Image (cartoon, rainbow, N blue to C red; front, side, top):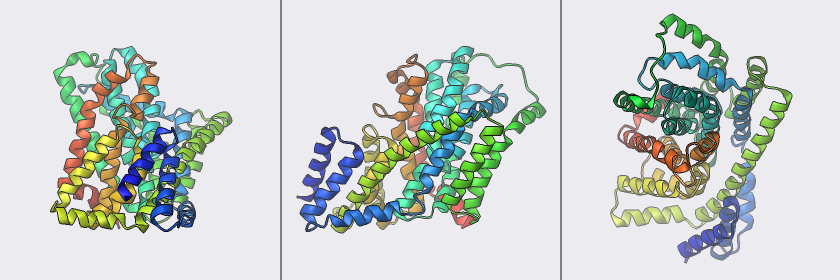
Amino acid sequence: MFWPTLLASLTLTAVTGAALGAALGLTGLIILHFFAGGATFLALDAVWNAFNSFTLSAIPLFIILGEILLQSGISRRVYTALTPVFQRVPGGLLHTNIAVCTVFGAVSGSSMSTAAAVGSVAYPEMAHRGYDKPTVVGSLAGGGTLGLLIPPSLSLLIYGALTETSIGRLFMAGILPGLMMSALFMAYIYVRCARDRSLYPAGGSRVSVIAVLKGLLPIWPVVLLILAVMGSIVLGIATPTEAAGVGVAAAALISAIWGELTVKGLLASLHRAVLTYAAIGFVVLGAVVLAQSVAILGVPQALLETVRESGLSAMGVLVIVVAIYVLLGCLFDGLSLMIMTLPIVFPLLTQLGFDAIWLGVLVTIMIEIGQVTPPVGLNLSVLVAITEDEVGLGRAAVATMPYWILMLVGVVLLTLFPEIALFLPNLVF
């Protein structure tokens, strides 16, 4: 009766229009009441322990950091600085989109914020220059997903907090896969644009290497911010929460001096960050209650035993999990999907022998896929709004499909060569 009750409770609460956090939490309470002898009081302990976690307190700080940079207009300066680098390469500013998303992802931690920050600068400029508009949106949607993978990443931070996995090791594990995905995206743009010259306008005048390097000099504050936040975590100088706090102060200072941050903009950043964290926190609350109920009943262990009796290999189970993530990505936003599935996916796959750090990176790529999968795909919705419906959701989804496929290619490469994710954590820690 457990599985029918679980599925029916989730379905009924979702159908009523309840928020996902409420649906998960109510389902967990129903399971605790009817299947765990009425032990609903355990949900209170679980929620208190989760939100009393020092690691989890880093999440709102990283959200504030990203919002401050978004509000300050720094993304425009970074975009301008990187534009000459790819001026003569087939695809031109399409490569700049990926490069700037990579850089901004290293200070934002959010896929949607990265897509919004870069898209608001890039789309008007590229549309004016004559770039194919759906192709521009596709590159921004795909590049925006890098904000979830390249540290500091909200996805990896939440994963580490909920699974008690080292945040420092997770952040290090996200670097090479993030750069790999960035390289795959750029390679696709190069091949596509080399074959179809109509997608982008003719390149401008040739720029010398010295001129390019001089153009990159102004972005040193952002590079310094990245090194300060990541370096302090990796070197063990500060915890993720402490590093995020320092990062917020540094971002505010840099944005006020170098950017266009005003007191009004700072207050708007704090307001947006509170709303974002409230939405994430509510889902975390519901997921913690559901996770507690699932753990008490030993569901992951029962699933593991079922898998062993079925004769499925560990790789076969992984393929099924990946397929489930792809399907659920059509219905839920990325972070909600991860929080909702971790109570079962994490213990199941780690007990099958998969490394917890590697799994965090894999799950992050899977929820990135959800960010560009309609109808929910938040990156697509944000960019359609930025284009003011010049590019509809359908055209945006079609243009983003190659990046969707490349992310699945990234999952395959990460599975075949887990060292891509584990090399840096094993080297540093």
